[in-house]
Image 1 (cartoon, rainbow, N blue to C red):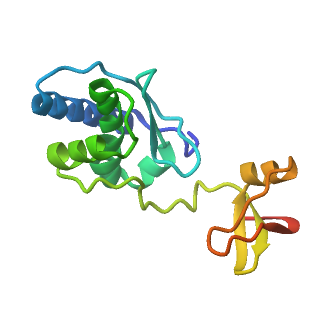
Image 2 (cartoon, rainbow, N blue to C red):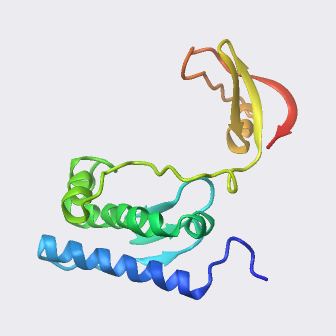
Length: 171
């Protein structure tokens, strides 16, 4: 039985076809052609997808895609494709700047949001509990390891330096 990280070929083909449809819509709107990216299903963490501008590559999160197929195809795919097209048209611009927002709204009729609102409880990794004046804060394993190497994090609300509550790993 395949792991939850692997997609069956139908789901892969549906996403690849959506990428193509998005490119065609952008080519029609902008009256020019764009090179097609390589597509990977290897995104991890809480991000639904990533666009690698200089290597013309898209990565998508297989678990989040499986759990949110319709919204993923409708929102995430155009979001990432717009990043690649912005780079090809405008060069280096802010990731969710006015150029990207205009493409999302005008070509796809979508609200140009920078983040998704999918349930990430299945894909979130181990966390470590820290404390500040205003209460407990969970840090990811990556940030916890940075604390161990000397990095100090401050609470975004109160500004206090976070201190570890215990060495126990929470889930």
